[in-house]
Image 1: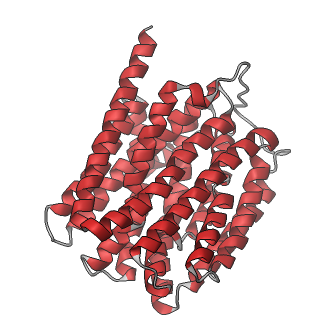
Image 2: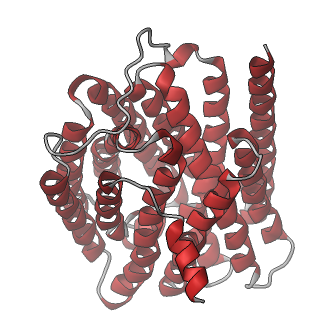
Image 3: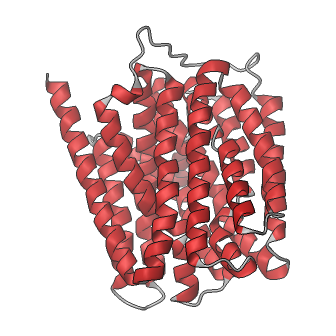
Length: 402
């Protein structure tokens, strides 16, 4: 057991001090992320919106994310990642606290749009910061450490969120989300001031390539949009499926969602370390992750047994553990060809677009077609995602041979 624990710790070796601070800031921020997983339940049960309204609110969520990611990328290239991250965390904290007072459909659409605009300015900025603070050989593991922080916070967040809803009410979630964002900003200001933090990989392209003209990157982004649409069902339609089809309580839903983060915290870093030492390419591993995530929806229609929810969650979790770190690393590596902020903004926007269409489409399909037919359609989208990643893998292989 001691040898196993030591081996586990060794998978974290070599990561810079700044990356560890970024992970801590991310952990503090994500530990308070309780509103988002329960947003669909809050909108239907507390504000009494119908599923169509919830779908449009989720589209406003995604649209704010798109605008915020694009703006964050532009500002990162112009004023630097540090200033963008500080502003984003402070602003998000204040807006999250204010969001609880939006009770009408229009007010909540505008509120969630504003929250996500400011919140997702953080995403391209932290990717560029992560690249700057990581040695080239450590970038995938650095990304994985940040994901571990996200999922450790996320494993506690939904479970605690379910407890807060059960004992108090939904308003407490908004306060916790807001305060943790502000706390993360305070930590960032105190420990990662650019004047005292060493940059390990400062990439400045002499003749930057526009990300919009990088054909391989565009194919990659299309695949990530589809992967995002599939993955995000677990945070909008899936909680409703747990509630309405399997009659789980909010606390049970929180625990099931928290299981995802706990598994990732325990297994992702050793898994990534092992996969890095295999002969598989980043695109091949992304393809495997997409297959596993699609399978998580296939199994849901096989039986009404409640245990299938855990099996589906395991498929999705391992698919996520493989797809996300290597897609992050692929985007960071590709960004060295041009303006890093632009590349990482487009990578973030791919998931923002998924937010626009994924939540809404899931809600509309569930409303019109039911859960089972929705899962069939999501599986087909997973097949298209796998096909695009296969095309990407083949094109990159042909480009290397030229």
